[in-house]
Length: 525
Image (cartoon, rainbow, N blue to C red; front, side):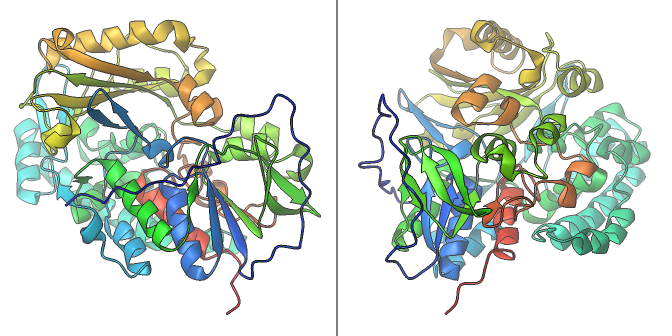
């Protein structure tokens, strides 16, 4: 069954900004409520999960969302009868969602129907060959043998290392807040056991010789904003996560999960206040005491939790004089994830040969990633993630039609690309490539179209540099070295989501809310 539809409380919150700015209200200690108030900035997966956990802990929670509907990067676009999930489409470790429902005394399966994917992905190479990647051990061994039977022993060794990374990295550190230096010191032995100083690609190449198999086993960090040639090999844990818990999609799309989370909150008396951009986190006597909206309205709070992009939060919502650690200089020196060019389109016909998730790779791997991450150069070639949700759920499109989005990793805004000028040319090139490879006749059957660029991530989602996932998950930008769940600079300020610990991806974002729960103040009974 699909998640029930919930009405979001937005009345009175979508007022246009006045020509003359209102005088900001001053903080007051005369609030009549008895429970401590937590203001959550943003209603992505991290913000919604944090709101549930804080509500259960006893906080009065207020969620402020910039957009006109909940979801953040998991926003849903409805256009011409087609439903487009804006961002995350891959669900693994579903027990993290089940936990949130259980905290509210509910059963996840009553609200959301997850369907296991098989294959998880089809990885299609530039020469037309492909690897169907799933969780069946025998199938995977047969696929490896189809490309390079001599690599089977190395593949087995890689799986062992990936499992070690899952045990030490995900299970051991995922919900640890890394709040104290002692947390880092205690984790160093496990980082050493994982060999975390190595890149993921180097770990894969140590065990596999076939170039195509090296790509298949190393592309996963791109799903969380990382270059496989640079991110720590600890992210081999993604491979093990998928083998352990599978890859799933929600009937009704990822938006069904968002609606389910919002429904849990509504039943607890927590509303998502949309069309309410936060423009400042107010600091009084060195402590976060609430937030100011673009209208000048002040919302008082005992704690503030930002689910926004962390670099943007510190740089644009917290005045510089309050930032000793996350200074403008440190923010600018960080290495950020790639940008994302996403084309959403619907077709008047169906492509039954295309699975739910497909990687359509170009002729270059390392060179293209260097252009994206190191040179910040928009190349003429590309590798694509093609998402066809109607392969699983035909209701995502009108009858006889298909819903797609295609995502191309591109440089973030340091490339200097004028996306207002280049977006249509780039989209047309992608359409031509898809028509020539996996979607024959595409240009003649497109009936609806929408494009999102890194500039949109910057302007609409307030993502620093238009990066899709915040800081790139390098070793020295992970765990202790990533922005902490409890702010290093501002007492009373906390952060969750892709750009804090443990990182991007739906499991990482949900785990950030678990880590938050360990460092927020206890609510007296």
